[in-house]
Image (cartoon, rainbow, N blue to C red):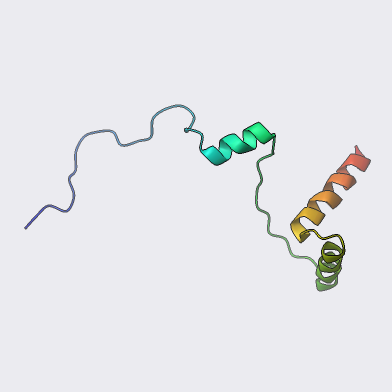
Length: 78
């Protein structure tokens, strides 16, 4: 019977310090792009239809349209 794993006393935790940057992270940094996060929200179905229609008319995505709307709103209230 062969051993399937070995338990040793060595430390297997990741090294201290920031994780090494990947090529994608570096491209975002160089381009000055912000990191993005995911949010899940529920909206009325009629607003979803309006967003889809507007996105199609402006040749963009719903995500980009929502970002533009939110940025415009927060620029006005500040």
